Length: 552
Ligand code: NOJ
Image (cartoon, rainbow, N blue to C red; front, side, top):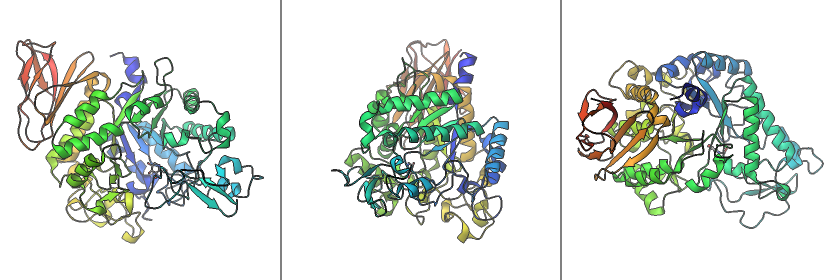
C-alpha cells in the first residue's frame, strides 16, 4: 500500500464510534453526561482502538427529538458544558490521535429557533424565506411521513404566519429552505465554524430530505440538488482538505450511489454513505440462518467512485429500520428478533439492541461483530455495543436504545452520581443491566465481548486487505456460510457461519495452491490448501474465521 494514500484517506481504515455526550459520562453529578466527562473517557476509547468519534447533536435544544431539534447551530447545550469544554475535549482526542466528526442537522431547525420565531412574523421577516411556506398544503401532504405515530401531515398551519410550513420530521422541526441562497450560505458558515474549531467532518442528517426542495417556490430556479451537495463538499475541502461528509441516505443502492457524486470518477459529494441495505439484509440472513440475502446484497452493492466508501453498522441510534425489506421479510425479522408490538416502532423497525434480540447468545453477538469488522466498508459502532448493552423498553420510542453508558455495576451503572430521577433515561435492569454488563467487568477480562471487539479492531487495522481490497463473495455450497475474500497486496479470506450447527465448507481460491497456508488471524493455527487451491474450513455453530494467505 502506498503510505501517502493510506494516511490521507484516513476514513478507509477508520474505526468510528458514535456516542451522545448526554448519555456517555457525567463529570459533575448533575445527571447529564458532559464534555468534561467525555474527555475523561478518551483513554477508554483509545484503548478500544477507536480512531474517530461521531458526536450526536450537542447543540442547544429543547430536546424534543433528542437534540436533533436545534435552537443555535453555533453553541453547546449548557447541560453538556461550554464551547471551552468542547475545545478541551477535541484537543484531548487529537492528542490520542482520535478524530471527531459531528452531526450536521440542517434539514430543519427547532420551532424554537430564533430564525423560525422571526419567520412566523410573515414575509417582512428577513427569515421568513428561510423556511418553506404555502397557503395550502399540496396534494400528497400525508405521504412519506417519517414519524407516523406522531404526525399526520408534512405540513402544519402556523396561526401567526397564517400559512402552512413544511416539516419532513416532527411538526416542531420546520424544514429550512436550501433553495434560498442565504440558507446555503448559513449552512456553509455553520460547517466552517466547527471545522475551524477542529472537527474532521460531519455525519450529515437526512441527506435526501435536505436536498429535496420540491416544496419551495424558489426550487424552479435551482440547479440540480446534487450540484449543491458537490458545492458543499468543495467548500468543506477548501476549509479542511481531509474532512469528510458521512451521509444518512436510506435508499436502494442505485439511488444512494448518486449521493457519492461522480466528479470524473471521484466521489465529490458524500465521502461515505451508510449501507442501510446491507444492514437490513444482514438481519434477514441472521433471522433465517441463511447467508443468502446478505451475500446477494454484497454482490449487488456497487463500488463507490474513487475515494468514496460505504459505512457499515450493526446498530445505530434510531429504530433498527427494516423498511427496505418486503413486508414478509420484515415480518420474519420481527418474529425472530422482536415479536412483541412494544419492541417494534413505526411498523418498520425495532427498538432493540442486538444482544437481547438474540436472547443473549454471545456466539451470535461475536459473529455479528466479526462481520462488521470484516465486511468491506468503514465500521461504525454505537456506544455500548462493545460490552453488549441492550435496550430498556421502559424508555419512550427510540430512547430505548439510548440509555446511559454502563461503566460499572452499582449506582446508575457508574454513569452519574445524581439521583436516578435526574438521568436522561432509565438504567436497564436484569441480565443486561450494569450488574452483569459493564466496562469495568469486561475491560480486563480476556474472554469478554469487549476483548473480542478489541481483537477484531486490532486485526482489522493490521489487515489493509479488508479496508482497501477488492472483495468477492465466494461460493461454498453451504447455505449458512458467508465467505468472502479481500485482495490488495495480499489476500484475506473470511468465513461466517450464520447457523446453530457446525459446518465444514470448502472454499476454492483460484490463485492459491499447496505452496500456501491459511493463517488464522483470530485464533491461533493454520490450514493447509490443496494443489488446486481448495481448503476445508471447520466452523463452529455461529463460528467465524479470518484467514490470511501466506507462503508455506
Ligand atoms: C435522522 C436522525 O437519525 C433521527 O434521530 C432524527 O430524529 C431525524 N433525523 C430528525 O432529525
